[in-house]
Length: 428
Image (tube, rainbow, N blue to C red; front, side, top):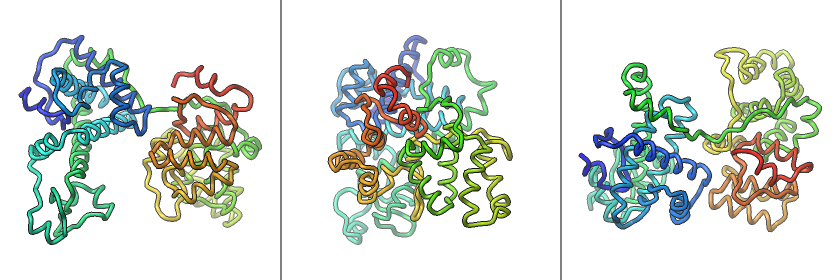
């Protein structure tokens, strides 16, 4: 069983581990995986060599799984990876939805990093283990394909189907070897969510006491969240301070003033942001009403929209206390044609983003720098740089904004305190 589990640096975690390990060692293994989560959370687009260095400095043995060649430490690292995954899978199954989603995102990212880093020989053996169908020569010739291609039913790689980049026939899509990782990611994601559903059902009666002990000793890493204690914001203050909004919210607020209406996802994103910076429900209704009634009657606004905004504040319906979206959630949203929600540093094209940055008096050199960060998918760093340019402040090199409400607070205080000291004084 051990050989089956520990043959490769990447792993699908299909069965709970059947190996014995001491309680202190299990706790240490979990601690190392939590270090990995923190590292991935703090670095949106970290490269392999940089990740190796960080994990080495933090004495995280999981870094050995980023080696292409085998080494004496590999088997121990694979064992640590397997055991810690399963313990933390159980631990996170007891948490809220956002924390479970955080676990899944980190696991998928960790798998993708290791899979892509495997040697071509090891990757081929790993793929062969799951008996994926190889495209035959006649099929490759028909679609003019060269190299190694696989034939997979379209529902098993939905993300690739959406791209419309690869040939399809009779419900099957043909994908190159380097894209097979999407099949594994979709399968792993489905397995993890199904497992959570099962574990949450059996927790009350079937979880071993020794496992409860381990979980109780773990300090689980949670999604980056912002502490919403910035005080109350009156409507008159909002009209003065909206220029301190992050670009994502500023664009939506300006469109609200210009068009006197926003689509559903924009209303939700901006509405929760305003709630988070302290705008009361009464003031929020007054704000939305003052704009909407410029294109509709007050009666229509009351009939069609008041319930919606009360729902955002959790006073009607299921009375859910919705939290403002963090950057990660905003960036993960789909943004269709004609929609303005989402993250402009991710979802806007370079021309539109550059024009917007110039409008906010960002210099040409800084625009180029921000566009370079966008290209590298460092969207949070691009937003942080935007804050520094617009508000003439400096933030520590290793610190990034990860929540729109956090941006607003820092922007409001940038003129009265040294922002580096502000970041240094808080625990992120």
